Image 1 (cartoon, protein in one colour):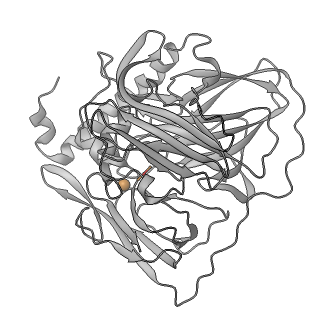
Image 2: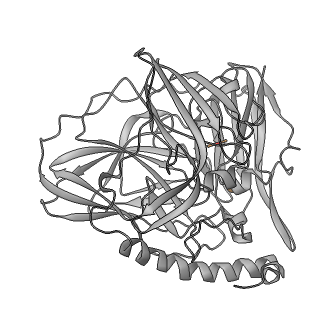
Image 3: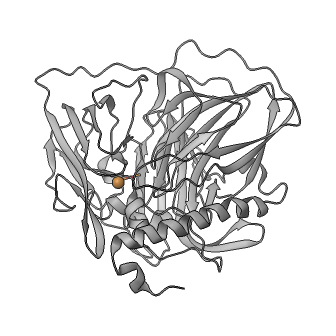
Length: 475
Ligand code: C2O
Ligand code: CU
């Protein structure tokens, strides 16, 4: 198409140009994903499930292989992708609190990789990062082992060249059950992503300056690997939907016209109390558990949409984009009463003596080159490790000095947000990934977990892989 030097002439001109192109393709993506979806295409958005081959009910033991595969994105198109067990997403792993989870991983990709268990409090040796293990070379195997400690919605993905590997199709969900379980007619897991398909139908492997700046945004939106899918729900019932944002850069801002979401949980499990939301913003890496009630008349069709969210750098508004449609059928059994109690939440006691760590997020443009993403003015791995001891309580103050939002993720433990811009959040629950709005400062309190080297980073993976990452070393 255009020679590469046009992109490189000046970086900002390239950004503006790409922005225009993007308006063009974001518009066409909506139209395309609709026309691509014949009736009944992958109805119900079911995820394949991992096969537990261990007869012991307290052990979930599975085989998982990363390999190149041709994946059907819709009935007339197949893309060559990097996958777990041949699909996008990879198999859903289910466990109960207290279970031992053993994953025998085989790497059949042409490159080295690892698996990180995002949000799960695993031993450091199973955290799947380059600071905790040697990457699994092509043809090698590695066993990940951990106890499922917390009920909630989690996910897994590689932690070597994460921007490229996750974008190529490597991600899957993990559900851990236990404790309070609100009655719902269905409990669905919806993994959200976007992929960039070239005109030829090939999964794009080019990284443009715009991709680096914003995290790659695709032109096809996927829910459980499917564009324009559909589910059936019964009228007069309530469903539980668990969302995972597995995209590199896209923020999903969900809306279900005529309905609200009752948000009951997020990253670290159930909230202390649910809250109602008309739109639900999910930054990359975050998870949200919601209840949705369908009082719609049988025969109604509604679409789950994502609305524009201004995350900085003047990203154009493509208008509402459809994720999947919901067909409301005959009335089902009326939902049982909601539980009286939800998640256990004990505020972490902080005193003026509690050590505060200062983390400044910034971006630096360098003329014609790609921008760099920094922590305290340094680029990973040059960022000095934060050193402390397991079990210590500390406050992190994260100051976003850049022109865009960054979703901040800490491995191996959950934290409690104390305030954003000095204002305490209205809801209380445990997080492992939180959006830090442009030019805002957020504080969280954390009880440190177990010994090891735990990464923290921006979950826009292009940013993490270009410097916005650091190590918390507990010993
Ligand atoms: Cu899902 Cu280090 O990340
Ligand atoms: Cu970022």
